[in-house]
Length: 251
Image (tube, rainbow, N blue to C red; front, side, top):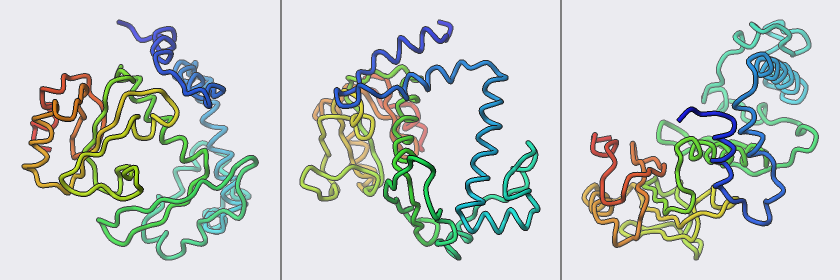
């Protein structure tokens, strides 16, 4: 069936916001954005590419110095080609001068949303500061992906992840090996939407345990199978009695 603005609106209506979030319009806006005319999308992108560097130059000392070094006028990026001159941010730069990458103030209306830390599997762990909207966007974009996949929001979802990336147990403690986490709603998206239950299993379990957990889903009442991949998470429409081909491929 062709994908149109109307079909995506219908699909979004399957996702029922919880009463306290019924005022949110961001999800409908994201649907509409997918069908913008090419010129309108390009204009919005160019505007964002101008506003973000300008704010960074004024409020973030690292970028103010960098843009001056690159001779970008007043720290802005007035030409479409100019953002390409900005080098990628590396872990080494963050580790050398973390404070220089923290904005002196937030954009109008912005509030601090906390921080996250990387796992440190490729070196020293990094702290990443977020605004409230920045953290929210993770869930907003995840819901969009599930909508694109035509996932039933009321189905059970399951995930095999590294322990720091799993929700805590109801008593506030991390999930131990050998135990299944059971929550009444999906992790993340379930905060905003009415969903089915969520089940989690730690990646640190032995492969034998993981295989047993997947091959006997009935004991966990899973009716939607996780897309395992490299033990990341995503809900599949495949029946729970079948192991997803991405897992069978040895990833």
